[in-house]
Image 1 (cartoon, rainbow, N blue to C red):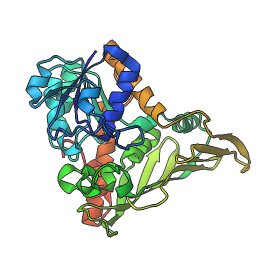
Image 2: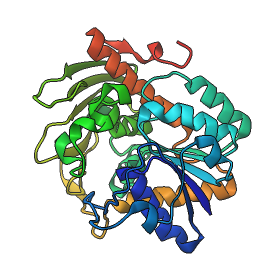
Image 3: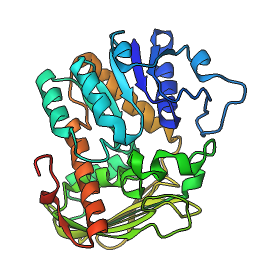
Image 4: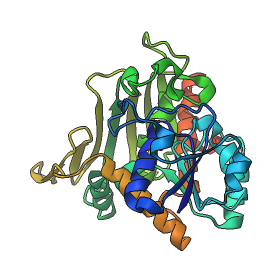
Length: 351
């Protein structure tokens, strides 16, 4: 199977390793490369000294995207900075190539309307890489919500904090996309997974107000802290959602908590421990997902995308779904910059 990569940094190489595991010698790797760095990374993002990315994975390199598409790849993995996602995706879709796009969909809404139209016209599989939808703990929370275990929801709290310089030890954090405004960085967009989970679980909130900014001494030109309060109306009731994101916490934290009048659940995504309490406050379920490792999510996601490419089915995180979390992130960013509550209706591809 011929796969084209646009971007072979940390996440691109993870997808490449997983494709090699799933497809073996059937995988033919092509890459549209601009920077052309040849360091090869391990799963833990340390450098494999003495290795060569292009040689070891037998990557056929192209310095022009049209030339790469002329090779007629059967799918493309877009893993470059998010500010470049949409222009690259438009070319790939117009060439009839199914797309796997890393999150977030983009850094703004420019060109997204064209992309939606092109994908709909060609009915191509288009998956946005929200791998946490394949986490067993989060899937369990989704099942509990659908079973109305929590009753009327009272509050939702989500937190993610991790020290930016520790993300990619192999490169200067100041040059990472997440640290640079010109590449669509900032904590709101870079840690957008939690916003996708909020959308997946509860739909889009009605409005959002965000406080924070560049509060630390990190040498970046984007926000490193954002605390967002959302107003949500759903089938589970009307309730607030609090999301905190930062580039600063050591050790890292990542958690999701749902409180209802009939039950309560807390998932610690650093330890993979899920605790569920019933209406009396008794611990009624606990799971630490023994045997689960982080890469399992990525493998399941890649396997799902390959199945969609083979069948033509719509992926579980479609282009439309990816747009909703982007709208939420852009509303949060607008609230942060303008100092006001922003309705989600203000952020759309038409307005």
